[in-house]
Length: 193
Image 1: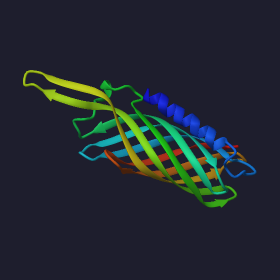
Image 2 (image 1 turned 90 degrees about the vertical axis):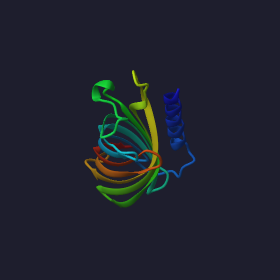
Image 3 (image 1 turned 60 degrees about the vertical axis):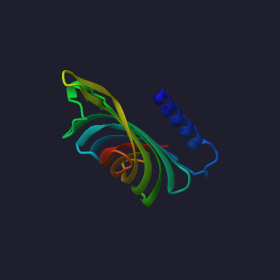
Image 4 (image 1 turned 90 degrees about the horizontal axis):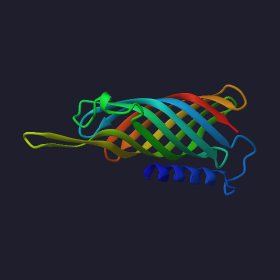
């Protein structure tokens, strides 16, 4: 049911981005991106997390330099140094999902190069140990999906390959609300239309 809510939210936002309430731009109002992302997280109660995977994003420019951004990622997550992380054989390969919703501003726009700053709400989920109970004769473990939210800032560089295709790279920092603070490094391609 939660996935349906997020997919519904994604489609509602995509429709609202493309509605006529935004200032009309001459060209390249929409940007679709795909990137390969490396993630490193630190959990508040100890433990380190590493993940890598693919993130698909959509951006819509409201004005010449201001845009809204939404993304969804599928990643392979591995945790260390905490009893709350599962062994890799206890998890599926795609065991972490991310969702972001935010705003961005193009700091530099000149022909082939764009440097942008973004601020976004980050929601992430990953498989983990939810509860452990030791009765003395038996250990009971409950596993499932844990979730977390954070504020994420991003610095993104885009270099034009041709009129619509761009090479993108970015560094992001997730500021902990509850569980994780994180660092993100992404490399990918975007197509503007």
